[in-house]
Length: 482
Image 1 (cartoon, rainbow, N blue to C red):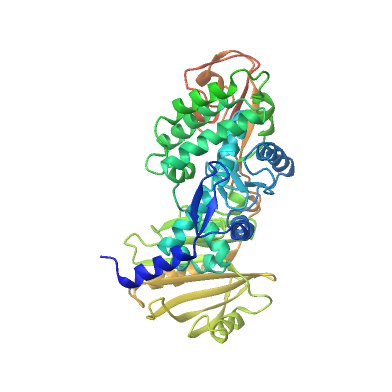
Image 2: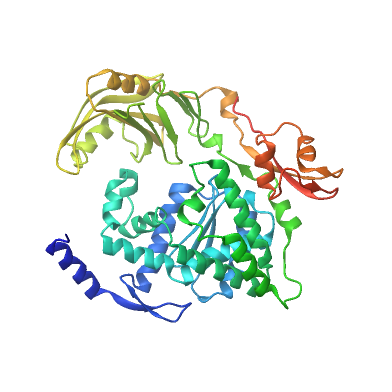
């Protein structure tokens, strides 16, 4: 049963809603999101997305992707929107867009594409989500369901530091498009690619690759497939659309060789320079520090934080960087109380292998007003860097809490030169010298970080396919962590 208060709020929302014209269909649609707000969400969300995922540090590659993106944007239904194309430093195979013309593609997806036309197809698809107002419609669904701020409050304090508009943009990354939206974005991707002079017949191979990545991942679908559901027989339908769009158009661009050459030395997979685990021990060469987490706990290493949880999920801990200026660890703990971030902080100063630290307990109110107790440590790991380690056990004072505190006290500066010099796996591009089956040829490239099946997916070929002398192939050269 829908309660009267919810009905009242929904009625008020609908009364305040405006009818926006869809640039693609020309139809009027219900929208709680004005065009100006779309622009604000995109702008503020861009700052948050960059902070969360990072920009891949390759200006030439960034300029190349932007050039292709802008050529597609010019033939879209919103050519003067002011489009922004960004390569994210993330290994996940993904691409997404936010309102206001912000389009993102990860280095993980770039590595798996094999032509400029495939890249154009991906970017055109994401442009289509914006021009058809799919991203704005997602925001309207958020507003009507009341999940905008609720989603933000359900996530970490790190998420809550962003503005409401940035929170809305980040929230979009967790929502799925409808199958109808995906079908329309596929159609627009084909249309924009052909209009910009790229061969859309390259697009079906992209969807085949995404499917293979998903099949190999098992239950852990890559982010693109988890937020862009397959509307059914996508590969075959896109092939028909592409053939029709390419008909009668001479000299459409594929540019496979030129695209693949640009991928040489692209970072592949997780970059150990940004932190990595060996067993329960964590190393971060860039900060630099090391720390040992409780034995047998599950870990998650994200760009902005590391979390760990006990097998029974009865205890958790979180490691992150905080903004503390030049305060001492003890001074920062007192400042949390002064600013009302916590109710109380009881602890004392310590030294973690020569690093100034504070270890103690924090008391704070939960979202339902309940009193919560945390064990915490603040470590001045560098003059301009304060690390925060916070943990909580379902049974304060018991064994799990002791494990958390012991883990905190294992924090040390990283001084091992081999660890400090960690290098990531990288894509290497090689010209095939002798024709043969893909498996035979790829095996001749020596030690690799990815097996032959993974390499076949990376090259958009099947393991038994014949490759000819002179072709370019990609393989993944192993990095080192010690």
